[in-house]
Length: 165
Ligand SMILES: [Zn+2]
Image (cartoon, rainbow, N blue to C red; front, side):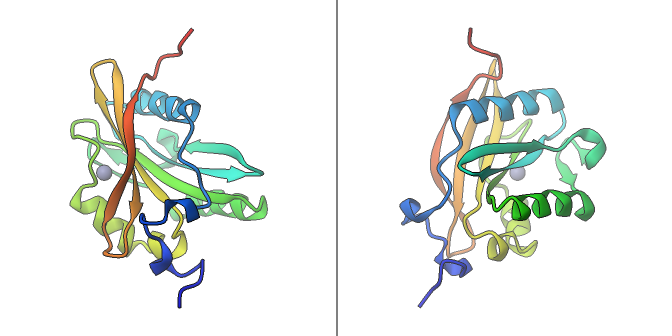
């Protein structure tokens, strides 16, 4: 038997059981704006729900160390955000980062770091969102962790980081 907190219960076969709806188009646009701002470096952040309202944190450059291909978020910075989410009784929905020069597919490092950093066991409901610049827009793809310790695509599309008037 599995419980809702059992990491093995996270399955893309049952997305209706996922407490987090996919990010809204407005949220995707804000994330794409953050990716463009960080370009050519990777952007990264997370989103969650508080009282069914989407909240977003995009790590500012001073909050993490980054190279064009990798980022590292200090535990202290991350802990403060996770504590806020817990105190607000929010639900962490997912993590995002950009692939400035690769398509929005999970890399081997993405897969390995997800499972070794305990994000899977801690946040079985969390999704992975990847974005890649494509002309004037960003191609995005949303993934759910699988029981096989990989990711399965949930949805994908394109988002323009510029405001639509
Ligand atoms: Zn990646």
